[in-house]
Length: 438
Image 1 (cartoon, rainbow, N blue to C red):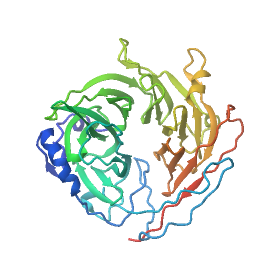
Image 2: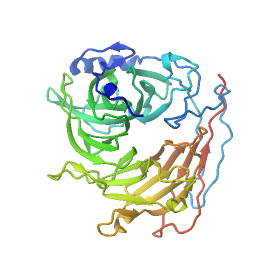
Image 3: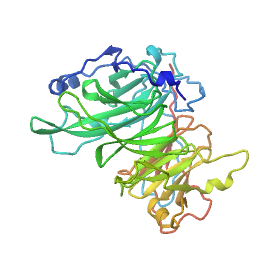
Image 4: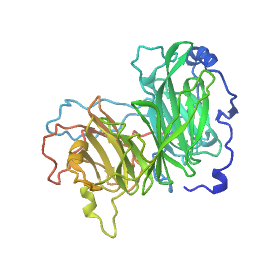
């Protein structure tokens, strides 16, 4: 994944949308045009096909896709005791998109889709971007393009291309812009990848208004602080995480960026998350050599921070010459305290308590045993980089697997006792990847 030095330091081309250069625009003009653009969303040539599953970034594992959008295969369902879920969620596939293929080639199954994120909702009473419909819009990245998709219609509203780039990560934020005395919300998408550059896109008007040369090596993960809308964390293969203040663009899309912190990692960060109860104090990261936390408090202290804590998991005890379980390739908070994480080849997902783990930490000790409350059964695959996601509002965890199936878990009722046995609890439901024909 390392870029050649000459390739890193070149002047990057102007950001392209549908392979056309876009000159600098005025936000006032764009805001007036938003309603018209959203009423007639741009349609992409979406074909029946199958999006390639997230697999290792150094090798491709091909699968045979034989069939047309059809009926959903019979679901595996393993109910758990004490579950409040009386019936499984009824989900069926609506659309199959192959929107990241090179040159729109329907035979291209090698371009990998790396990340997706739903546009954030805004329940503010302030003036919003015209036509903001966040619950149905999702952004995806893979290859040299980023797509913004309407999930109800299955149409690609906007597609952004950057020649020679390969995007690995994206993240949304909602900025508060003041224009002629009026405050309005502006949803911005940050994307990054192989070139180490973060691109800032105002998706509603098809415009990339800026870029940040964040790292000299590829960007692996992005994360905004939900309490500070302009604070962006970028993780990279250079084994560092940097906190940026991206500022708020004015009516001509001028903005100012400043670097606030640099966090040193002993490996490549794969997923980062802020602790919900103290997002200005602690950042937790899953990496290819463990799970770590940093003190990110902004003060007069040095702007470079070392690892504050390393979390130790029970699976580490099973390591030998043939197996290393230190890669933690996904992590997310389920609520204010509960953390879900998984180690490569673990075959399960750990649910552990942030507060109890912090409380059990010995003074000045760097290594801390994670207080595991529950362990959920998952695939025994050796394919890395398969992300898990949490839905705090619905009390659920979702995680894909190497076959394309989606494992769904309803969070159990926890007792005050931590996990002591080797029991692994089954998923509430498994949604199987439907058979499709091309």
